[in-house]
Amino acid sequence: MEELVEKYLISYQKFFQVDIVISLLYGREYEILYALMISLNDDILSNEKDLRESKKSINFLEENINIYKNKIIEIFTVIDEKEFEISKIDFKTKGFYLFLETIDEIWDEFLEAYNKLSIYKDANIHEVLLIEFNNSLSHIISYYSQNDNLNLKRAKEHLYRATLDAYKEIINDENHIIISNKELMKSYLEIRLLEQKNIGNKNNNDKLDIIYKYKDIANNILTLLNLDT
Amino acid sequence: MTSEQNLEDFRKDRIKLKKVSNKTASAHRIGKGSMARAVKRTLLPKQRNEEFLKMHNL
Image 1: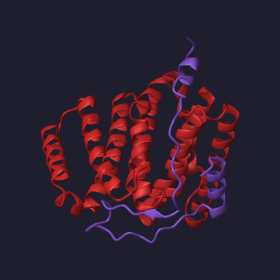
Image 2 (image 1 turned 90 degrees about the vertical axis):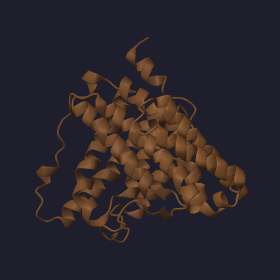
Image 3 (image 1 turned 45 degrees about the vertical axis):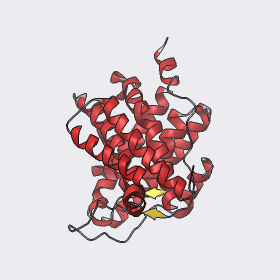
Image 4 (image 1 turned 135 degrees about the horizontal axis):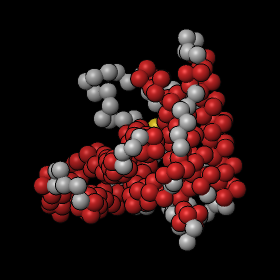
C-alpha cells in the first residue's frame, strides 16, 4: 500500500512539473487531472479493487503522463529533457498516514459534489473543480518537500473550495429558481449570511456545515429539475 | 497495528465517479476580463485516455 501511494504521488509530481510549462499558454491537461482524481478515489481510497489492479491502473496513468511529457518536449524544442527530471522527494520518512487522513476528511463530500455537477452539466470534466484538485495535490507535494505542515491544511481547503464551487455553480446557473421559490430564497439568504459571518473562521465543522447547507439548496434545485441523483 | 494496516483503513466503500459524457464544463472563474481562454486542447492521445477510463468502468 505504501508503494502504491508513493507511486501515485511521484506520478502526480511528474505531471505537475510538465503541466506548468504549458498550462499558461494552452490551459491545463484536464483529462489527466480527471484521471488523477479517478485514480486517487478508485486505486488509493476505495477498497473495491485489489492492490494488484490498483497498481496496474497507476502504472497506466504514469505511462500517460510520460506520453504527455514527451509531447511537450516535442513542442518546446528549446527544452533540455533533463529539466524535466523530478526532484527526488523522500516520501517515506513522513509516511502517508497524515496525507490520507487529510484527504479522507473531505473526499466523499468533494466527490459527491463533483458527481452532482456532472449530472447537472451533463459533462465530466469540470475545469474549476479540477484546478482546485490540482492545487490540493500540489500542496500535498509541498508538504513532503518542505518542512511546513500547513500545506496539509491548505490541501484540504482547496477540496472544500472545490466542493462549494460545485454547489454554487448549480445555484448560480439556476438563480431564477431561487428567486421564484420563497423557501429556497429563505435558505439561500440564511446560508449567504452565515457564510459572511464565518469569513476567516477556520473551524472545520463550521466549514462542513456551510457545505451541507449549500448541498441542501443544490439538491432541492436538482429535484425540481428532475435531476435527482 | 502496523503502518500498512493503518493505510489500508483509508480504503473503504466509496462512491464512484459518475460518467455522464466526455464534455468539458469550462471554468467560469478563469479568464474573465483577464485573458481569453485558449481553445480546449489535449496532448494525450484520445485512445490512451479512453483506455484508462475503461479500466475504471467509466
